[in-house]
Image (tube, rainbow, N blue to C red):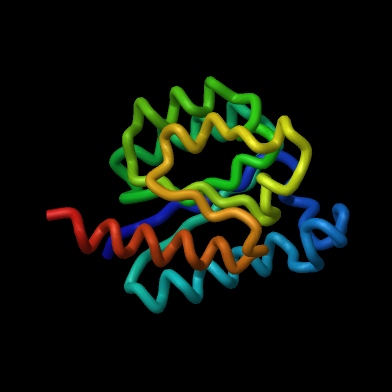
Length: 147
């Protein structure tokens, strides 16, 4: 059974309470439930990690090689700043779908660029937590298309 690691970066542990007018009221537990349901629909195994620390996320990306078949990553603010995270994603080379709960293209100028996107096979932005389900489904399709 193919497996997916869902990684969430800084401040995503505050989903549901942090700026609900932007991020909604869904919690990180709701994100995990959404991903589990999408993974079950597509016959995937799924695991989760959230960290507010860049190095922990880099280590998780490194550790994913050989353990997972693909990644879903919401890098939070690190997407806009972290070349280190980009380098880890590029080095590992796993299929990757980047997720942003809000539409980063309708926000401040600095949020409109994501280093992570340079390594991503797809980007989902502005779809709320439903974007995570889209990302899991996209990875499943990529797995099916890969010989």
